[in-house]
Length: 152
Picture 1 (cartoon, one colour):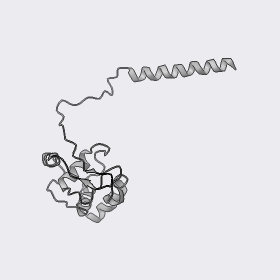
Picture 2 (cartoon, helix red, strand yellow):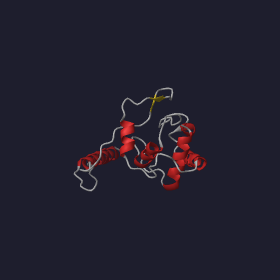
Picture 3 (tube, rainbow, N blue to C red):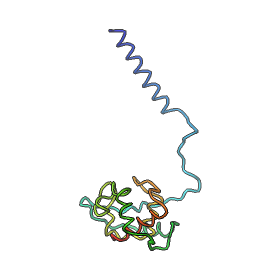
Picture 4 (cartoon, rainbow, N blue to C red):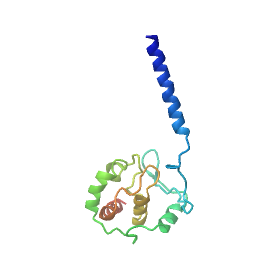
């Protein structure tokens, strides 16, 4: 029984040392670095208070960022189908933007936030914070944009 305890203790120590060594080793195959030509973008996420109401932005960063970013279909208007966009939204976006974007969840409440097509498409294309980039594209992007505009 004593040999089994010693063996278990040695194996646990080997596992810990191996984990520490792996975490501290130099690796050139996955190093994180910022590209030299990277653009810094201000956090322009729609913010909500504890009741889910949209809070006003404190700067013009949202306008500056949306205007400076190239988007697909960047006409400022959505050419998509809002009904199809609602269906896509329910499958892709509603996990974070609750009740069809009408309530805050992990993501902010989108309804009544005064969002533009350019801003919506930029946020979908580039992501921000917990929202990953490129969740939808092409016709789905246009349709989701039309839906989100319809709840403004």
